[in-house]
Image 1 (spheres, one colour):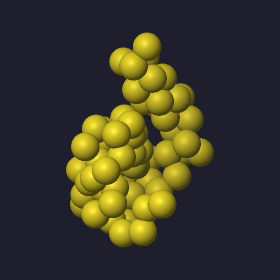
Image 2 (image 1 turned 180 degrees about the horizontal axis):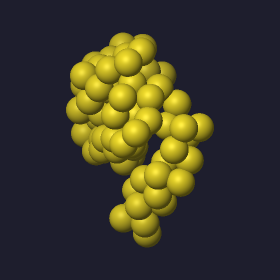
Image 3 (image 1 turned 90 degrees about the horizontal axis):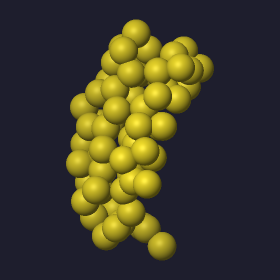
Length: 73
């Protein structure tokens, strides 16, 4: 069980964190920091998108996820 942000450093699996470039709700700094906590974390920033990139830019979101998984096959 992961109880604190520091516990994320123990996750051995690759992790994709996705953010919208124009996310004015959280901004990119906390999302970038989250991705950096994972030893194998990767950040994908979706252009022309706010807080909901999977809704606002579904094709770009799908490409980011597909590329992430394609690198691991």
